[in-house]
Length: 394
Ligand code: ATP
Ligand code: MG
Image 1: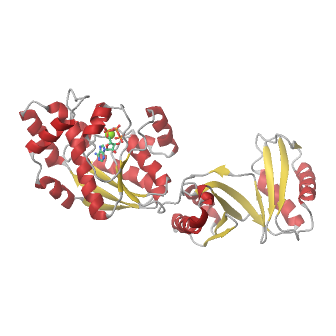
Image 2 (image 1 turned 90 degrees about the horizontal axis):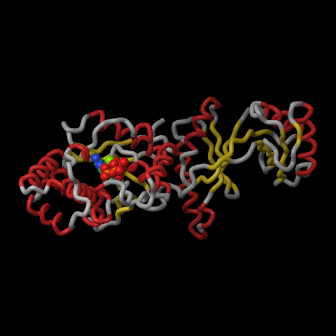
Image 3 (image 1 turned 90 degrees about the vertical axis):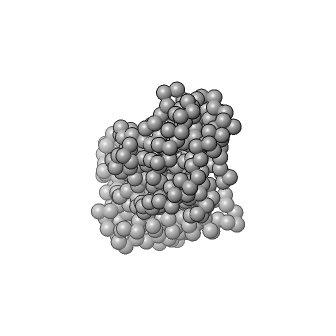
């Protein structure tokens, strides 16, 4: 049976004069998400986007991809048939037969957008309801609280049969809200932070700090695999990998020499943000993203966040007011949790001080950093940054 996906827009509908621009980006993103498949047809009519894929064996995979396209609020998988009532009856029964396990009651809801169709909506519901009762005898009708609703939509070109919408990715089409560079570690939080900002229509790239040989190749591959999962929502992205070993060693030794090891993580974070900001300026990103949340660890207390507030460009911290359990829930939903939980080391944890400062002072952090004098090391780190092109996980 031929299937079609109907995508319903969400927030775009509120966009007034700009609506067309948002819709065009959404159409482009849908085509990109399905670009590996042959015979894809995408068109829009009255705020519904109709998406067809020629190869039936790709329906499930294509549907999965569409659930990750921001800007689509609800998705519906419908059977498509000719506008002939006998054809519709047979197609409807075929379509719902596989969906009736555990289902006892149903109702038919008909919508006749094409007024030239000979039966009106109540007649379609009545006639088709009777036919379904005959063909699938274990079902009975319940018009108030049915287990299954069979929707029949008679539109201009075809009849669509479906059993309702499912909630899709929501948000705004990626590419309609500017560019941001997300600091991606291998942890649970930062992939969720990037996902949340991408959801608001921001095209994101990632920057990762590595410290070989303290951090392994496997740790880097883990972060790349997280980036691939985010790319499924984001439409492919660049991954900037910054060599951080020398800077970290110099910081460790410099602080140890003056007995201030407790400032290690704070100053490391300041350096990360400064380097990320330099990359953002060079590559045309308007903002940074981190996965920080107030009080989650010593380097995210109010005092620590004040000390690490070193950027001129905005730093978005979408998780700032969220509990860990809320963040974990999202990471499970977007399928990053398992990968994030792999036990590989991050450069942050390599030199973690025994007693990190929980009430650090900004002026002290600034002075310690200036005394160690990272000078040209920051420029060198930017210059030696490796750029990898990440494709969506398929
Ligand atoms: P996450 O789960 O995202 O690693 P976390 O709770 O472990 O967060 P920290 O390790 O303190 O928190 O890191 C805070 C933020 O700094 C991270 O959310 C991330 O944005 C950034 N960050 C940490 N380590 C790295 C790294 N190696 N490369 C890039 N960004 C990093
Ligand atoms: Mg971390």
